[in-house]
Length: 299
Image (cartoon, rainbow, N blue to C red):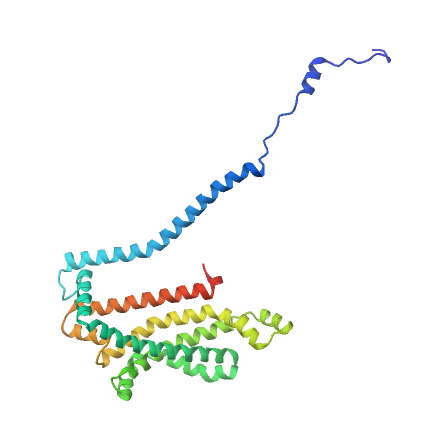
């Protein structure tokens, strides 16, 4: 080919290179919006279904346990002197309620529990604050806390009745001794877990001790305090019943004792069921309160 000749392009190559490239479908915001909107109801449905299953788990567990209890007491044991069926217990609760005897026993036990629980909670929180903020107070109180916490307070109930009589104050004192120590120990532990770095940072910004306490120390200790109060519910109810078993004129412990002496198992279990229901309700109330006061502590 000469230097002045012009290269003529191949028509096939021209057609090949002149083809337009294949377009790729790129989703836009308008295209993705329906997908997101369609996914949101599915996610919401899944969350609601999971919450519904969790809420029903406790109910199904209780119902299943009661059905099993009914079958065992009706078919295997079949003797109310040894085991009362749930239906018989409900009948006993209804009969005691109609006669007014159940309300009288519940009222006495509720007063004893409420007085002892409130007094013990207040004293326990104050002692926990003192032990957490003062090394001298901790050294002075720690031997008493450790020794009395390990002491079987139930064994002291007859002594309290001897001192204070069979009125409500001997039972209140038993409840105080059983509730006081979990609240004190948990309060001190909660205050001691407060971050020292966070406290030093607030001090560097000029925060007062009062501000540090209400903004950092108290919120940090609140889950521990509520845990101690929840532990105190069960211990306080046990204290009421045991103190009433040793000597009382009325109360759920008295009802249980009378029913046991008469071999009346339905009424005996009626008192036990009422106590268990009270513990469940109060514990659930503290769990709800914990969710409101310390929402950051949720699972």
